[in-house]
Image (cartoon, rainbow, N blue to C red; front, side, top):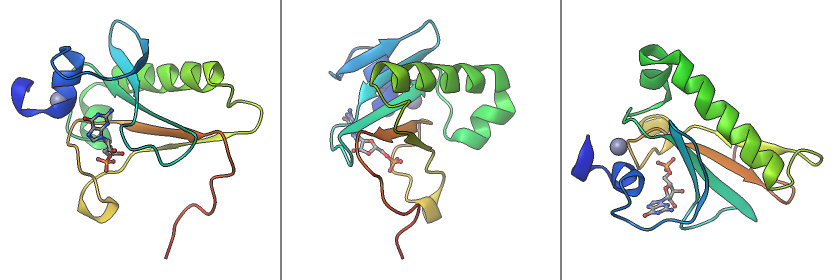
Amino acid sequence: MGTDCLFCRIVAGEIPATIVRETATTVAFRDIDPKAPVHVLVIPKEHYADVATLAQGDPGLAGELLATAAVVAEEEGLLADGFRLMFNTGPYAGQEVFHVHAHLFGGAPLGPMLCR
Ligand code: 5GP
Ligand code: ZN
């Protein structure tokens, strides 16, 4: 995808981010506008627009993304009290960046799953 995509530019090092973990195929970095004490975004380096496209196109990579999220959750000390992993997908979910990303939230009680 390249220069049009914000998260591809973070992968390329063209836009700074606070990277907390990087593997051969994934990157995890802190959200610029955190919604919880821990709010990390976990992405594949390869561009996929959303989690459905990723899961259909490369289920192995989807698994690697989940594995990275789990390691970051452990490194951030979230395993004992728990955490939330969320993929906003499409307009009803309010997805704003169309490079698939898991939101990893934790560090405090996270409230109800959905606000109405
Ligand atoms: P979405 O609404 O697409 O699920 O989430 C996009 C997320 O990306 C938001 O939580 C937003 O704060 C985060 N974000 C947007 N621009 C940047 C950026 O330049 N750097 C980082 N680290 N996060 C960003
Ligand atoms: Zn991208």
